[in-house]
Length: 183
Image (tube, rainbow, N blue to C red; front, top):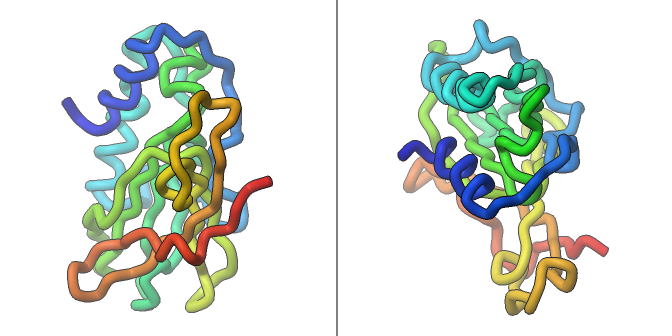
C-alpha cells in the first residue's frame, strides 16, 4: 500500500465524514508549480494522490499541491507535496480531516528529485526564502515534547521545523527544544 493510499485508507477506516479545508495547506509564499514542470518522482506521487479522488468519483484540484523552494541551501529547487493542499470536489473526505501527508523531495538541479522526508502533519508552511527559507510542520503530542492527550480536543499542537542532514541526505525534525507551541 503506498503512503498516499494509506492516508486515505486511515480516513475511510475511521468512518469519519469530513469537510474540505485548507487548514493544512503550505503557505502561498512558496511558488506554486504546475505538475508538468515537476520532476517525474513528484509528478508520479501527485498523480497517485489525484487518482484516489478520481477513483471515488471526485474531481481532483491539485494546482496548489506542489511548492518549490530551496530548503537544503544547495541552490537547487526542492519540492513539497502537501496533500492538505489537494481538494477533491465531490469527495471532500477522501484525504481525511486531520493529519495530511507531506513529502519533501530534494531537487538535483538536473530535473530530478528524490524523497527526503515524509510524514503526516496538521499543517505546513514555508517561512522566508533563499538561504533563509525554513519549513515548519504543525504536529502534536510527542512531536512537541508532550504526552499525548486523552482526546483530540485536549491535544497540544506545535510548529516544528525541518533541518537538513547532509550526512544522510534527508530532512529531520529540528530538536524538540526549538518547537513553537500553537496557542
